Image 1: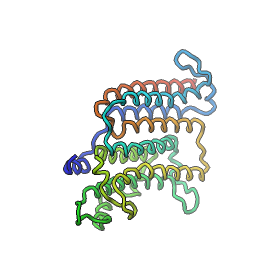
Image 2: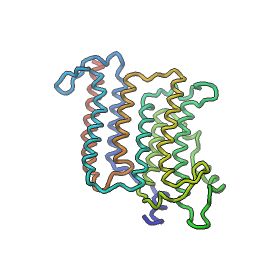
Image 3: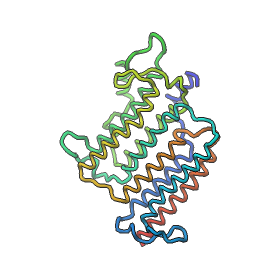
Image 4: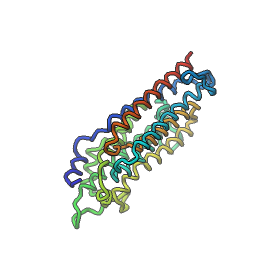
Length: 308
């Protein structure tokens, strides 16, 4: 990409995900909602997998979701064999979505009432942790763009300038705004910011990844900053786990299985996020459509069996 192309991608309209990814996510959300509606006392009730009685009842019906996603991931891996390599930036960014879905798996079952409860003196609420996580991701993208936009040579700044700090304070929503709303609204905001900056950087080459920058005042390159995205989400996912533990919240068995479903989706999506290899879009769309249909229908079936 030319310098002009780089700046256009970073400042213009947000590039779009290939349509099969949002469609797959919608199937994941629908299945998760059905699974989470199943009470613990129904797990050993009968469930039919097609024409066959499941030996483990409805419990296995929920595990089927993860198996469906993992089977689709295996299909995708085979479909990508021999395909052109993804850009260096796409490969560097891909782990971010693994971390994102690990967090989303926890949020899928989080009650709004837990967002503002103080876990213990001096510790952040769940809302503040999530607000910081989203604000951090947006700031990582914004300041990475600023570094890429700076001139090379003797005029290149050695650190973020006061002018850049002032501009970021004006252009970015800020931590308080990032944490507003319900769990569902916060989840949507998290997806939006991760997708936006991943897509903006997705096509960049090794040359762009090698651009010098800083992180917390320490000299690094853009590649380091992109790699920090997933690490930052994971860091605050662990913080959220600690917060919920202090609040006495213990995930149910169903919630734990649904978390594994989200983890499996994150691993699958990392093969095609933020963008799949060129020429593989149709094959991926077919795989995800079939997997999504199975995921939704079997989750609906498991819920119906629980409600029977």
